[in-house]
Image (cartoon, rainbow over the protein chains, first blue to last red):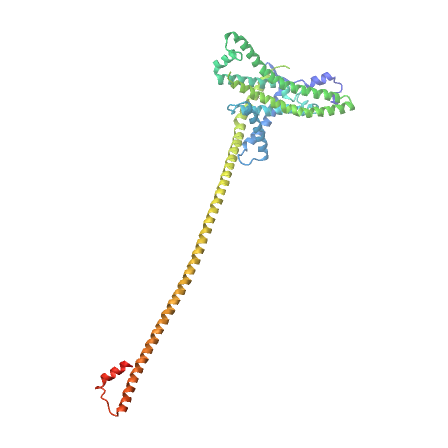
Length: 264
Length: 156
């Protein structure tokens, strides 16, 4: 950001970590997160639906084979943790995986180059990694949480679920009811929290480390060289994190829903 | 880290995406994969069946060939035997025919001989009568001496 050399490190970082906020119905909306997540989701679903439209059970083309590979991978992973009917959990896991992956992958794009374009949209900041926004990861985790409750009630019945809240995991003795309930409460709260914060923390930290390296790169030739090399290393490592976090998010989604189907 | 309306909008977006995937993406793709799995399994089974049938057919061909070879051998053997028989029969026939011809010829010759003897006898009788006539110089009544002549002829 040569044109803004007068910026301090603090303002550089806070500038890049500011959302494009717009007032909405008496509150605020992070329009950058919304736009990026919708655009990325539409892109990836369009690719998948193109494969789904032209799919043939005969000899598959290379594109179809690639998509089937992805589908087979997701299905196999879900199958390993989710024993029941995968009619809904399969597509859910696939959507989570590809969408989160796409959103995570935005971290690869060099922030300052992208900013040259996004500055035309918002002068106050435009963050392109939707999963580095706690709202996105929370939204996903809470949706999964809602499904978890839904499946608990659907599979065990409302009475069965309430019974489980009071009688598992320690036992059905009335003296143990408060402990069971407290345990279950912690479990139910910790699930969406850890689910969302893990992804958010990884992506946010990844973004921040890139920003720190770019700041180093702004100090001069030596800094640029070292910062560039380190950023390259971090970017390569980040490829792993991006895929791994998308995978973990998908797996936890499947695991949580599988746990909702388990009887205690 | 502040929660705002973005959360709700992301929940809705997520729901729409999952619904879309559930409705339009997952079912055709998974169906295609499962159909192919079925096709491949069927193909493998068919190939296995085909291989089995091939083995059976080869076995059957071997049997047929063996049978045919045996039959051919029998036929050749029969033919040889038959030829032998025919030759034998032809030989016998020829021999019988020859014998018969020979016998006929012999009989004819004997007849011929008998006939010649007969005529010779007659001529000898005539000669004898003529001789006797000449000796007696008188005519002998052939009728009166017919018995005599007949006896004479029998003695010849």
